[in-house]
Length: 495
Image (cartoon, rainbow, N blue to C red; front, side, top):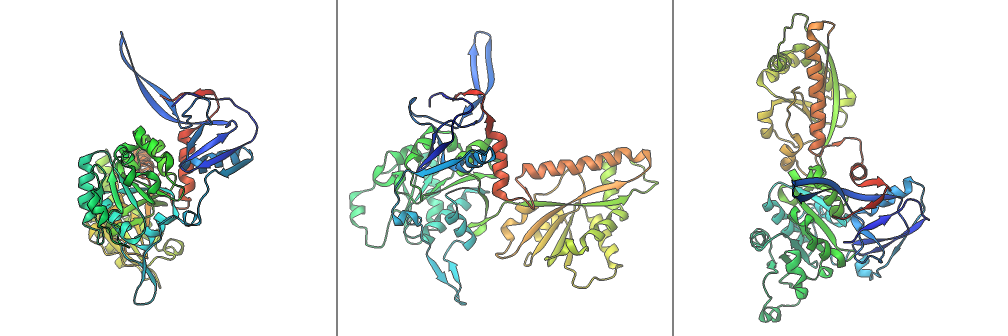
């Protein structure tokens, strides 16, 4: 890629959409780039310098610059925020079949009640795939990715599916995982050559090789089966590919109707260093893959504050004693009970699961509640320790409440995500403690507990939890703006 120079100002301009890239006609009033580091060696030694790597490219110096299509909504929003008129034009001519989504037509059956159901994919997962041209799925194991790919191949029987990974060994491992879930066809590793006699054995209505596994290089060298324009659904199953130029080049001719899904481990999906590449290939829609090829929305977190008075004779000297006092403080337990029985807290909820860190808190809360008046139509309240959480049953709309005030906490959503039934809503709440005291001897305790509140808030954000009332796509657009957009300062260099 060559150097691009963008000067501030310029006339209103248009964007030309061509398959997986968007051409720029005119001068953007901002640059779009990500942090990068270069190693410089000299006689004095080796230095690592921080720079920025442009996300606006030009294959030929005189050619129209472009950016990757998943970033279109970010550029569109940035221009709108500056009051700059924008015109877009679709350079490609799509057939009616392509406009309808290519061959991604679902194989839908009916259940005993006559309702439409998916054969293998939960309907939410099917909708996720069909609704998003680019998306990110967070996974916990490669085996779960194999299950998802096999289910998608079965549910979209006319579609051709590509699976992109980094090397031959990974290809064969994925093939074994995927083939275990395929009923009507086997996957094919693109490092091989498809024998002529196998092609001749194909029967009408039965496509033997609808799932093709390979690297961007091996598929690009296998035009008979691996041309990117032939695929309806592409899974990127190794995040390291996002850093490789062969993937960038391979996608240039992917069709407008092709769905591209980036599969990333949890550690990558929430890592700020990976976000620029994830935005560039996966856009701003994300989900979490659980058992049975089910794709759940990202976790959300709400915070609820409680106030309670610190006992006047409480003597505390260190963090251990702070936690010990919190776990046994009846005034705190009463404040928690007062919170969870409020009508606005329990509205629309059938079950509240109150999670404490220690058994003494559970026993103390149960003893406290046993002496209170029952509230009509109140949801059931379960109290468990963090160690007991994995044993609870979730079969109704449930609010999971973390009540173990300290710096550490559980990733409640992911702990339970594989066991949330279809149609059941689960929300997560963190109780924020604001103890009150006029005793100067308690000042360190009050400051420490307040610090724990802030630490948990930061940790939730680092784990990818979204604020409960925020639109998910807008949240990621805001994150992308913070990381990628800079007002024009002249030259942005590719390194």
